[in-house]
Image (cartoon, rainbow, N blue to C red; front, side, top):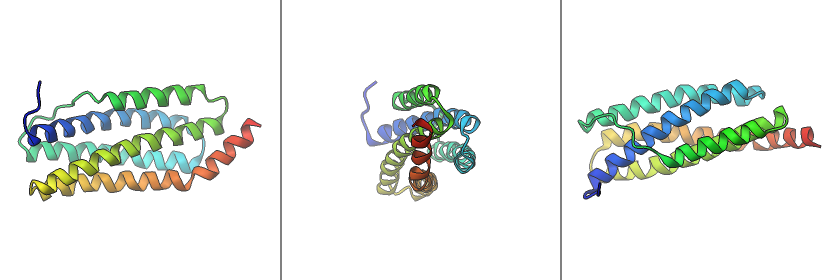
Length: 165
């Protein structure tokens, strides 16, 4: 189906990130179970709760648009989740698995950050600050998680390097 308006494109992008959030939520559940670094596990558990809120915020966006809550298949998210699954499964020790989890979360967060930035700009330009505010909440939490994984990178990588030598 051809997209013929910026509204249709916006709605498609909302459906894309809505599907991505659902896919990433499943990944985060698995990551919590498999992470051994307590700080990492705690941050992921918090992000699980935030992701549930992201989904609710997106449902509110749909309601404000008077549109059906439709997931548009997000092949990028499916690919990121599959890559994460493989990477985590292939890790030969706990520290390397924690590092793999961190890398996987980085990728999902940066995908989401880019998606939310575009959606927020579109909502603001369309005069829909009510929608932009909901999307901004999601963006801020994604940026916070990306900050955490960035801050913990050296610790996790050091542990993985020591366990691998």
